[in-house]
Length: 255
Image (cartoon, rainbow, N blue to C red; front, side):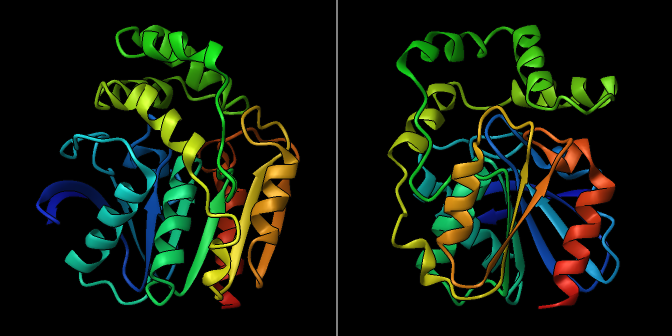
């Protein structure tokens, strides 16, 4: 798996890819990076492409933290790579980014997969949590513990260390900024502009996204299916990669 940079709308964005075939673009969540997809990029018949959004990982930073801004760069990334109607997969905050992109450019994607995604109505973080969010900016061990808490069934200490290292590369203003962005995100009534097939995946042990939120996400689309994974937390892509790959391949075979 080779890493590359591409210039999209004036910003250098890092990405890794694997395989050939149907393009599948993988969009990470908050404090994330392309590495979150490392266990699920081996998709037969697919060209799997995992990027670092601007403000994250090895990609260049923006002056703002905003879901629509991230969606604009995701759109530019797809264009820069010349991808024709990719399947677009979003995890957590990345799900909101994918929703925003698909609502404004419904012709761009052939299908969506939303994994423990923020709901179309957004995700509000209580004000009392913001001082702790700011502590993550400089405390890697605290960040590592936070990532462990949202991946309860992942038992790979090396990968957890790598994810924590990548998290610390995030733009400083994006720590609280991304939480604020998710709080003001609201595509309720707009997400359904995308009429193609949608797979919503949610883990029963998720401590961030509730079942009601997952059902709201599925209900926002006219052609959506919800899959609930009983023994998984917020991140099926690292907690249960084999099951996630089974679900996405089954989904892709039927679109």
